[in-house]
Length: 167
Image (cartoon, rainbow, N blue to C red):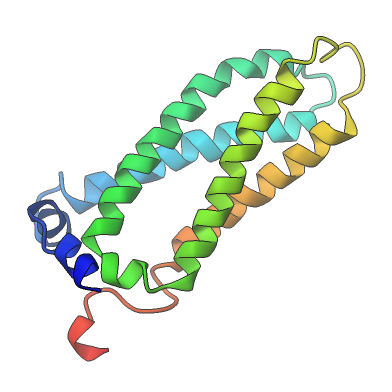
């Protein structure tokens, strides 16, 4: 717990948490939301095409979205770390945070696996999408939806930020 308090007392953490500047918490949270929309939105678009929501849409051209989705991932990794250290004692005491991390790790693994197993298939777009590709797309949708829901719930379940003296 001392380590978490030390993280919260870093100058960056205090600035993010307590500054009235729009460049502090509001901008970091906006960037986190933007990164999430790029990553989860791009992944959802690919997943829905693979699942047949747009049956005539080719899958292979969607591979071009991967660099953008990885950019969204890194934006989220950086901004999420900043938001975490600014409120470490609260977030790291919340089981919801760990559930969110599981969804993110599995979703990232699925993203990587889909690129290798689905997009590197030379038969892609020459016939129906494989059942294994559809399973990966379903797991991907579940993971990103779960990560988003858990992320939102962090503000409402478990320990509440700013009440360290009231615990």
